[in-house]
Length: 80
Image (cartoon, rainbow, N blue to C red; front, side, top):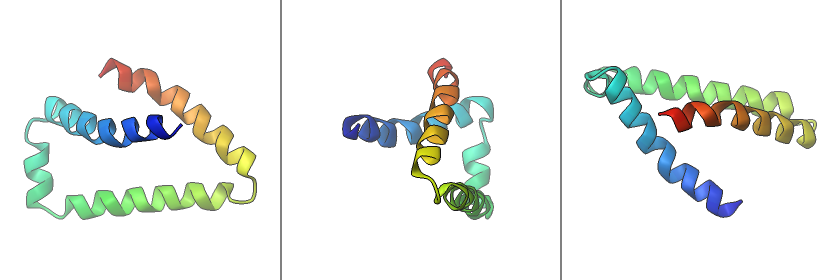
């Protein structure tokens, strides 16, 4: 599990930047020039916080959610 986590932490940001640059060539420049980076980071923070808040009463339910999300997202990431 630890090696999978390290591969994910290393590969996912690189993949995200490459996909964004492919789909929208000027998006990284626009994000750097505006405060969009802080807005996106805040949105991500709220989303992750809400997932933790909803699943903190049952760790089994949390693991089931994370596993299901991983199985849904994996083919999308593999296609990129």
